[in-house]
Structure formats: structure tokens, C-alpha cells
Length: 449
Image 1 (tube, helix red, strand yellow):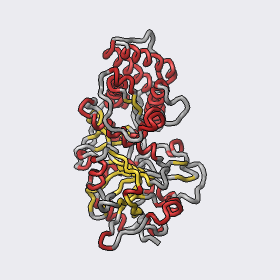
Image 2: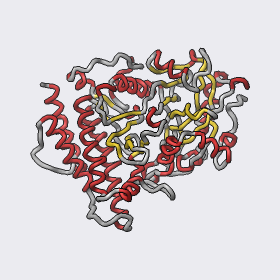
Image 3: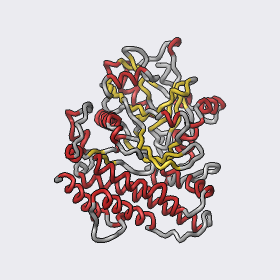
């Protein structure tokens, strides 16, 4: 048996002195990022599809367990892989990471709970490192169970995020097909090559390379790099869910901010989130044709080392990004020079495969829903709960206050940029289809100028 493919219990290091030592290897900044990912989760009963027992998935690998484990991998010939990335850029990323073993082979990481899947399909395609070249990879989950922070033991500055394929009865089919990997990597390169024109209020975690075994094109992996300013600690990205979620010793980020600042939660959220993101969303949609999956996990607040909001955002997970290609052409943007998997353009770059998702109106509706329902409505829920329990001073928070303020900011951003207004004010959360029709009229004006 391959020495990299050991029984699951041998990979777990949770509760071990070794585990604590391994985490302490990481720079302080990355440990602070991990705290938000694992200690500030929010309403897991609602946001995790884990409603029944699953003998095949060990719950210790859930992020709230803060488990640390040795990440198994198999060695695969490069010729047996689809290596998806910007050609030379993709190869460069491999060579500068622990994925690349030599000129002809790659270490392909596997979630420990999925070893049975790979042993069945890869067969003799994998083998172990010889002792003189043995590499020990260490991983811990982020808020996304299948996305891990991984580093080479003893080399903490080699840390990167790795999004892996995962399938279980309780968590569903979260495998990464060749098409999904190509879409994520292709859109990451596309955004990276467009970075000089992007609004300064948005940064991102790049996904420069993906690996998919040719024998199993439904079980790929994606490397997600960490920006330098995050590694060196000058910026701490906090997922929006961390504003609300917390555990003992790790209070919700919003409560931490309120304890240090004067004013109300409503005013603080308006300043650092509602007004800022409304302008950014309108700019991305109508100036750049980029539509984010803007929920609390993929959208992060940029914070200073002492956790002061910097007024900017980070985006991660390019699988959720969609592009309005027609608007970009109308705006005079050049066509992307590199996108993998273009022979299946429609399924890779036009739709996620959901019904009607090729329609731009549906993409806008989903992006609005992500932010209105999964961020703002949840923030209102938390504020009402804290107000009732006297965790925060009473300030007259009522249901709908945040979504109404955000709706006004969206309309004002459109008025400032295009001089177009609607005849009535309303809460977009409850009339999203009406507002999407207005957005499509704005887009029509842009395309016919």
C-alpha cells in the first residue's frame, strides 16, 4: 500500500501536541485568518446541508473542530493530468509550490475522507515519495469543508488554500469537474489580467492553477494563493459571516467593533458595508460586467492589523463569478487572451448549469439575493437578537432596516453614475424582480449608447 494512503485515523492530528505545534508554525496573520474561518461561523444549522448522519464522513473534519491533519496525496505523471492554468503561468505556479515534484510528476492532494474514491479510480497511477524526497503536507479546514489551508511541514510560508473534491451523503456532491476547474482558473486569470482596470475597492484570492486526473475528470483540485499583504499581516480579511458569528473567546466581529467605536450598529454597518458595497457592486456590474456571488463566505472585509475596516473587500472562489461578455465588448474591453475549456464555452463561461442561469437577469437576481438574504437579512437577525438580549444598547433596529438602506444606496449609485432614477423607493429585498427589470433597462442604455 502507498505510504501516503494510510488509514484515516493516522492522518488526524487533532488534540495532539504535534497539531498545536504545526499551527504555531504559521505566521500570526494566517492564524488570525484561521480564527475567523473556524471560530466565527454563523448559524450552521441553516447554512450547512448536514441534516443526517453520514458514516462515510468524519465530523471531526468540519471547520468548527479546528482539526489539523496530514494531507494525503498521490503522485501522478503530468501527462496523466489536465493542468489548467495560464500555460507558462500555470507551470510556474506548480514549480513554486509543493505540488510540483519534478519535471514530469505532480503531487495531487486528496481530502482524507475521499481516499476510498481515489483508491478505486486511480489504481496504479499513484505511488509514494521515496524517503529522500518525502514531503509532509499539513492541512486544516476553512469555513468551506472542502477548502483547506495547506502548508509543507516546516515551511509555513508555503501555505496556500486548496479546494478539493468532496462527496458525502450529508454534504452532497462537491466534486470539481474538469469544466468547473477550468471555469474557476480561467476566470481567475481573466480578472488578474484585468486588475489594473478594476475598482480599487476589490481585491481577490487568485486561483492560478487546477489539476484534474485524466482518468477521473470529475474529481479535480484548485490551488488558491494568498495575497502578500495577507501573509505579512498588513491586511486581515474577515468573511462577512464573522460579523455575526462567534464562539467563546472569539466574539462576533461586529460586537468587537461596536465596543471600540462610538455610534450605533446601524451607522457603523452603513459606513463600512452598505454604502461602500453598493457603489462597488454597481461599478462591477455596469463598468466591468462582473457579477459576484456576494454571500457571507465568498465576500470578505479588509481589516487592518488592529481590526479597523479599511473600506475595501476581498473576493474568493471564482467558481461563483459570472461575466456579462456583451457589456464588456460594448465598453470596449479586449477579449481575454487565455481561457481554458473554450470548446464548451456555454457550460463553462455562460452558465453554472442551473435552469435559466444563462440569462443575465437571473445572474443579477442571484447576486442580489446572496447579499440581501444571506448577508443583510442575517445581520438584521443578529442585531434583533442582540438588542432583545441587551447585548447591544437598544437603538430601534427593526426588520428590513438594513435592506432598505442598501436599496437606497444602490439607486443613488445608479443615479450618480448614469443619471437614471426609478419613480418610487422600495425595499429591493421584497421586490427583486422589479429592481432587476430596472437594472436591465440601465444595461440597455449602456449597450445602445
